[in-house]
Length: 255
Ligand SMILES: [Zn+2]
Image (cartoon, rainbow, N blue to C red; front, side, top):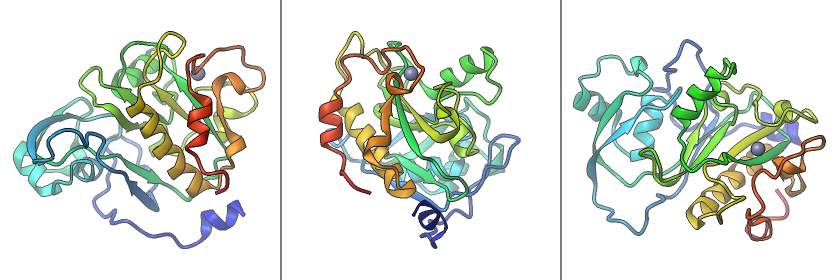
């Protein structure tokens, strides 16, 4: 079943301009799922804004996130080579549409579980976590595959950031037990849900992301778990206020 899903011909979503910003050329995604803008309550008029380049973020993906032509971004920033984007650089995005998530999906590797975490911090963004995990000795950077932001450190509430390990289709470093780093996709929500409730915008983004991943990899509902459910782990993560019932209610039973 899973083999079939992985190798059936998939819709190829124009990826010609997809280049790595790091030394490793990532595998090409066979599909990229765009979501709805996360700020539907805000003005939908295009506006100029700055975007900080995250780890392994490409000009192609950034252009899709804001629905702005790659050429327009290159011109606005005097960029000659789209593959030379420096991590942390602030790019001017001219006439940006409201930010929407773009989730790259790959057919090169099977994933069997989705493991949900919280960062247990008030603030966070992928670039900061990537750097701090590298300092802690994780040479491949941020241990989670995805991060869902909480509106701190310049990120939007509910913004989904794609981590470099997902782009390279590498093992995670988020749940070192029961083979979960090898078999599970790690998603972290920025926040401390042992102390605070989960904001609705983060829950909505989590549901969208988990649905996209479950559909592509054929992951059953029973394999969508919290860090605390991993055998051999003694942790509260993602926190006692994480709304498991409501979250599971919004996910389809079958895939
Ligand atoms: Zn955790």
